[in-house]
Amino acid sequence: MTAAREVPDILSAEFAEDPYSAYRLMLEDAPLIWHEPMQSYIVSRYEDVARAFKEPVFTTDNYDWQLEPVHGKTILQMSGREHAVRRALVAPAFRGTELQLKFLPVIERNSAELIDGFRERGTADIVNDYARHFPINVIVDMLGLDRSAHARFQRWYTSIIAFLGNLSQDETIAADGLHTRDELAEYMIPIIRQRRENLGDDLLSTLCAAEVDGQSMSDEDIKAFVSLLLAAGGETTDKAIASIIKNLLEHPDQLRAVREDHELIPRAFAETLRYTPPVHMIMRQPAEDVELGGGTVPAGSTVTCLIGAANRDPSRFTDPDTFDIFREDLPTGTAFSAAAQHVSFALGRHFCVGALLAKSEVEVGVAQLLDALLDLELADDETPAEQGVFTRGPASLPVRFSPTPRVRTSA
Image (tube, rainbow, N blue to C red):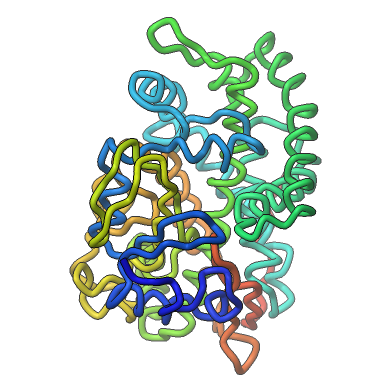
């Protein structure tokens, strides 16, 4: 096993500024690193990360301390039949006709409303004016909650994501996350109880009414799922849309191709998930000693799987440090399923249940942005920097474009 000092420390400013250079060193020379401050083994190669996501020996027991304090017990911590039943309860709402007929109009409306807020200006920040708000507003509306709660949920989302990415264990961030947990529960539990008595046509009602083999979700189960949805559903779409636009602006020929053919948007999304994924690391915990990355990882250890490195492993992807929506080694047909070639939604039994929701949001959002923002280009001479370690994306993305009038509909 290679010593951590041979590559930039994962908690260092050097790593945060440019993790991709560190990933190259890890892939070449340090496939297994013991990181003392995090008390974790770090793996980076595609084969090792894919194994950790797919093989049953790698459990999600780490979520007991990583996620449960802020979310409560979620589907991610479950295994076996408990996991299968819980997934069967929630999955139908995020795929097929339920998604397309019931929630696609919600996605389209929220995207259009945000874009109408800046399309006449000729300038915008894609992150702060659009991407940061879009998925959270969609989730609030899907749940059938009062739209006045958009700002409240935005604050809770920011707090939860900070808690989950608190690798240095900052006490203030941890305390704020726990306070958010309590506030979210105080808000959601009474609404869940009221909704059980008055079911509607919304996601919260679907969760309240769902039943598989005589099992249903408790109030706490639903609250925990809402909290998880805020984090997982918000962060992936938020950073993915901003990163897609940034990557396309940096590759004008590919931007032109996507403008001319919106059928290429899923390709741009899949390649962005590989090239600049929103989530850069996911943890697992082996139930027994395993050989991994050329060394032995003891049972019960935490394994930090570097998604951002695995997706750029030259043994898996040709020219991995190049953004190319036309690459042949990343099939779009499977990119949003458990058979995906990238590892940004994990793999196997814990593949992201909301992947198709994220795909729908991205397809709608990117299409509407490109249609509304003509002559789109970066507003500054310098390319906006990415920010973050656990999750990562542009901190801001100032753009300019030819103003277009709002599309006003008659009452």
